[in-house]
Length: 321
Image (cartoon, rainbow, N blue to C red; front, side, top):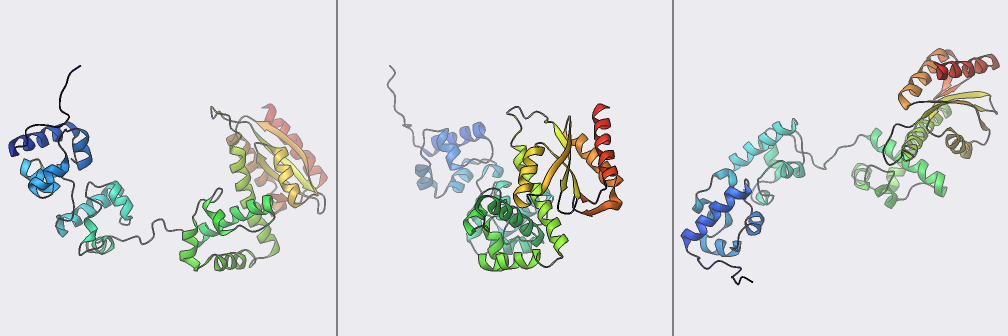
C-alpha cells in the first residue's frame, strides 16, 4: 500500500500556474472550473481566492484567451461578435438563448449585466426569438386535432389541458396559452376553425388527421430490428352511400375497425399486400389518379360495381408483377 496525500503540498504561485497550464493542455478548450477540478488535485476555490476570479487565474497563467470560460468580463463588442459567429454557424439570424449557449463557449451568466440577450441580438443585427420555437396556427390546430381524435377514441371527450404535455401531442401547452391566453379560449378557437367549413370539408380534415394518427400507431408494429414492413392497398365501402375508400395501411383490418368505431357501416371489400409502403403508395396514387373524376372527398370515391371489380383485378395484377 502506498501512502500519499490527496492534495498538493506546494501552493506557491509558480506551482499553481504550472498546474493550470498542465491541465489546459490535457482538457483542451474551454478550461472550465469543472474540468480543472476533475483533472487536478488543486481546488479551484483556493486558486480563485489567490488571484481573484477564475478568469484572472487563467490570465495569470498566460493561457490562450480561447481557453477562458467567458463571463460578464467580456466586452459588448466581444459578445456581439460571438452572436454573429453563432448565427453563421446555425445559418440563421434568429435563434434562442439556449441555442447560443449550446453553440458557444461563453458563460451563460454573461447576460446578467446591462444588456439582455434580446437587446444584444438586436445590436448584432439579428432577430431575437421571444419564445423559442414559433408555431403557426395551422401547426397548433393540426396537433390539437390529433390529440382530440386520440382522446375522443379512448375517453369519449375533448383533450384536457394536461394531456397536451403527453403523447401524441408534439406541441406543449405554452404555445397555445401564449397564442390564445387560456386553454378555454384555445378550444373555442379550435372549434371555430373546424366548424367553419362545410360538412364535407370538416369530414375531410378529420379523416386526414385520423389517417396521420393511425399511421403513427401502425409504425409501432415494426419489429425490434426496424425491418421494412409489408404494406397493403385496400378498398372499403360505406354501405350508407356506396362510396368507396382507396387507401394504404400496414394493418388494414385494424384500419377497418377504427373507421367502424366512427361509422359502423364501413366494410373492407378488398386488400392486397405489397413489399413496402413506397410501392403501396405508388399504387394507391395510381388508383386515385385513374378514378379522379369519381372523387368525392379525402380518399373516398363514388364507384360503380364495374369499377370496383376493375380495381380488384388491378390490385391482383400489380401484386403478381
